[in-house]
Image (tube, rainbow, N blue to C red):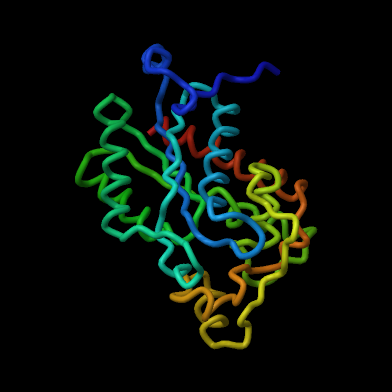
Amino acid sequence: MEQKKRLVLGEMVWPEVEREMANIKVAVIPVGSCEQHGPNTTFTTDSERAYEFCKLLGDRVGNKILIAPPVTYGISTHHMPFPTTLTLRIDTMIQMLCDIAEAFSRHGIKKVLFVNGHGGNRPVLNSVVVKLQYEYGIDAYWSAMGTNLARKTLSEHLDLPPVIGHACEVETSQCMYLCPWVVHEDRQPGQLHTNSMYYRKVLCDGSTAWNWKKDASENGALGDATRSTREIGEEMTNIALDYFEKLLDEIIAR
């Protein structure tokens, strides 16, 4: 099957974009972070993973989407106890994402999809899509592209712990498939605070720790990244890509 032509803004010059403007239906914006991922993957994990995922999505759907350069900082206040994690203020990130979407809108691309690689960005993205819809008149959406979409299927043949999603076997596996350059060979299991009430009642319910080192994991990781494989990463990525293809069809049809 002939590969479709993907449109990645960081790989193009403006005349190329201009020739494709009539075909582009959605601007796709990868959103990540700059934060610790334990001893397992680098600080740019979330951004690299989201960006490479979007490129594969572009290979599937072609010139219906224009893939923006990734937003490489996010809301990472809970990881600040680890040195050189960098975070944005909530209002800074909201305005930045709105500004990016508004710029696309001024060029005639009125639909945007944020592809999120970092769980800490979720509350901001919820606010951004509401703000864009009701204050800017821009048709905005967001979705994660990792653990949450694939966990049910992976659980059928992989014994997963209750809390995963950060520097664990699942996220690290996806990195091994999408962006192996961020993965360290000397991977380690998470040093989890499983006996704490905070861990059991807050983190296990999907909320964010206020202080990741104190409330979640001493070494910054969840799960056990020593169990990671490229094959698991490929499987979960294909599950997510199938989902995104259908999501884009619905967004475009609206």
